[in-house]
Image (cartoon, rainbow over all chains, first blue to last red; front, top):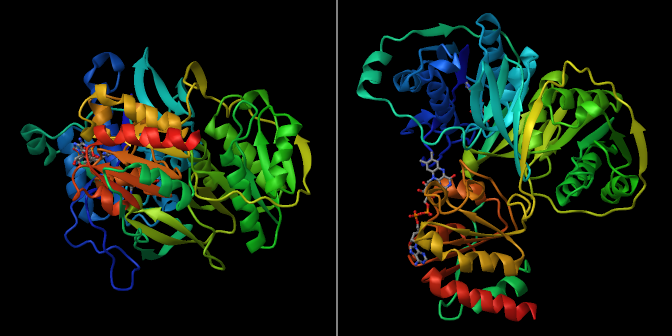
Length: 249
Length: 322
Ligand SMILES: Cc1cc2nc3c(=O)[nH]c(=O)nc-3n(C[C@H](O)[C@H](O)[C@H](O)COP(=O)(O)OP(=O)(O)OC[C@H]3O[C@@H](n4cnc5c(N)ncnc54)[C@H](O)[C@@H]3O)c2cc1C
Ligand SMILES: Nc1ncnc2c1ncn2[C@@H]1O[C@H](COP(=O)(O)O)[C@@H](O)[C@H]1O
């Protein structure tokens, strides 16, 4: 069985986000780029599965829609342990466009399990995984917090309101993963970093697809009003304010 | 034309979330001069369905089918898209919860409809159709133009007020054919925990961080949540250490919540933590370091030792409830 992990290239989560002068795009100077945290965890779990010979997982590939500027992030995924990588050479203009590109690749090269994160930390779309599955007409399971392979069949734990469900769907399928999928992201060892340089990274040109959405303007979040400090000797005053000023209790 | 809103039910009951969605859909419908059709999937009584009318649903469609007992994203999205076509819907509204995240992207591809996901306000404009959405985990907001003919909006939880209106609703039961080859999700086992208030539903949340020092110190925090009728949460290191269950972890890599009141106790306020709670209406911080970044996000703050302050807060709430 083959696993594909879709990775998105995002600013490190502590980055202060700034925009260009017209507020139409994000100013990328000085940004430290990383693998989207969920995708790093998906990759970790995919590699853990592959490490266990009884799982029957033969290879782990990563795919990314982005320009050459994201290659360091792809190399990092290879250094962590992915066997090979595919980059679709295009800006990812919106979720529909990005998913259509990834679906094209998956149609050509067969994968049994496709892993996507629940959301990218830049666009916060929660869309790409589900869209890929619909483009391919295959099942998708969302909010997946655990994946195991039992007798050649994937068993998925998904989060539902107020609990969890242990589910299965026939392969090929897309699993949209969230917290719990792996404990800590695997980090690249020196040997991995050396090997990553020679691992295959295939660059594919995009197919023609129209995007359906477009970001026109960015805004900073509205500043919160200054914090009102309450005398620590008399915290009861807080309760009074919550009741009479904020009117929320 | 119509606005279609998918109203999820839980064991035959709607939640505030469902009414929030219908209220939002009604306001969107006003903006484009059309009416609201609410869709409910699964077994539910008319007495419950009719409640959607109070928030502005003109037509309430109820669909039941054995194959829809389990949430299968493929089966659900095909049913919703069929109804959307029948109702000639130009805008479809779904919650941005687990179900919405499973269904909306598939629906988007089926209907070639652009999605504004996690919107927290009414559309900014209807021509071009522009929505306001969180990006960069709350560090920026974007105006997103949806260019397709049909638009899908997923509404962030707890981001819209309930608006009651005159009830002119009618209920319509519809039968749908579900192709069994589309409902391929098998559920082997369900692990439910329904005894307490769900964190994502709670109006009030009391949350503890590493400043609580030890899992043995949680009793006053839990008690404050109890007397306020709220739920408990925690920061990531707290759940990583196993001091609290993983379900409680809030933040970018945990749950994203938007209660009316979030009380952060011994939490420093890292950006990744704030990413999960910044939608809260009011944030209260209790921290012994007056320089802690959490105070920049909070409207009310107390600088001091949590262990001394919590018991006094509990007493003050008890006094109030007398
Ligand atoms: C990719 C990534 C994702 C992450 N995702 C998340 C996430 O989803 N959620 C999350 O929470 N974190 C997340 N983190 C971790 C985050 O960066 C912080 O490390 C974490 O939020 C800190 O938790 P804390 O506030 O409980 O602890 P600390 O930062 O250690 O803060 C403890 C606070 O308690 C105060 N304190 C100490 N003693 C007392 C006392 N007696 N009374 C009152 N106050 C006291 C201190 O002044 C301090 O401000 C993530 C990090 C990364 C890199
Ligand atoms: N440009 C991209 N290339 C490859 N995968 C992506 C890309 N953008 C998003 N994804 C995948 O889709 C998931 C959800 O992203 P989003 O829909 O943007 O929230 C991410 O966690 C990735 O797995």
